[in-house]
Length: 157
Length: 386
Ligand SMILES: [Zn+2]
Image: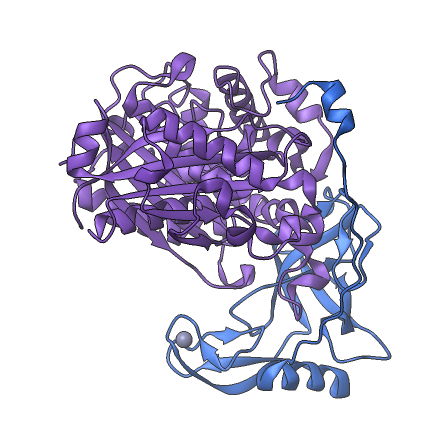
């Protein structure tokens, strides 16, 4: 490694980028997001072989490598299977801005689903969070057809 | 198994938070030339080059093109491997396949990352755009979720987690390449460091480092000619799990990709009592809790006994199985290199070149890699070819 005075002389070239992307959602994500937007329903899809109800729904079960079958409604109530409270400043990938912290985050198993989804919890105090806590999805009034349509999960008793 | 193949040279940079005195290619060059020197070879002796890197962190595509020259890739068979945290071990396994296949007589693997060049947090935010991106909170956020499940399931305590951090940073003091060297660190200081994501404190998590690591493989004949004590690859296994964290139930407890990779690798070598049979382990510990969970998954102890292993000091330098004499990923994390460092540090112990971190009489070494939500690599190195 070079000495400090040599280090000072070396250039740093700053680069700032604004990039734009557009991701086609495919058949299953389209149906999931459209259903949530139009009717406020959260839907999963059931594997014809192993019977797991997958949320997010996909056309193929990764474990069985067969096409998935019927759509089934899940939630909006669910159970917290894992939780944390985030203290670091972290960039919200959907806005590019840091999210205010601390905030609660959990793996929520929606009633009727096999998998859990990672989402924001209304409760952010780690002393009040616990595994097995019952929660319910709170949806936006004006929904846009993306995962942000679920605002957070509120605590229910 | 293919033909007998061994690691005959390793090279590392000094890993630290900022290497502003070099660019990425120069960093790669430092590790590559150190490995060539260690193996007493020149770049002409290298038939194939594999680079390992998480290019999103530096925001530059095609690192194999931009940095390949630094690894001597000009006019050679060369490409890049990128599998998240496992990049460095997957790259090392790929290098092994090249030589074990008999198609190449030598191969050099260079893992590297220059976190300070870019924006790791932005890189981590660029996960799945439909689901993860909205709520992702870096490696820390998703690990912290798994820690809550793991603590509830296996009864591991905050103090036991902090002891792993203390062990790692003290071991790192014996490693001239390590990033975080903290000879006097205490359990209290670890638990009083800032909370990143409950219950994970800053000193329980890996840092972001700049660094590169290279290893050189040779086929049997050349390995025996060039190296007095080659580190023979006895097993190399990779397993991938689902794409969404939500489908990997109780990740740290179940960690089925690591358990399955270890089961297959142990069978190849005939390992029955890993804690007794291995002389050293270099395992990929992104955070303290994961190290304890991997003890259980790798069969060093029964489930729920990982915490006791650290309490009893069995994985310290003077314990039954020293785990991470290098200081581990918790002490040094140039992520694309972190897996390659595990392999290099394992080989170094067999070469007998560990300096102050050398464990006496090393014959059998376990190496692991961990990446993405739940991907695992396992390698077993030995002083004996069979
Ligand atoms: Zn299935």
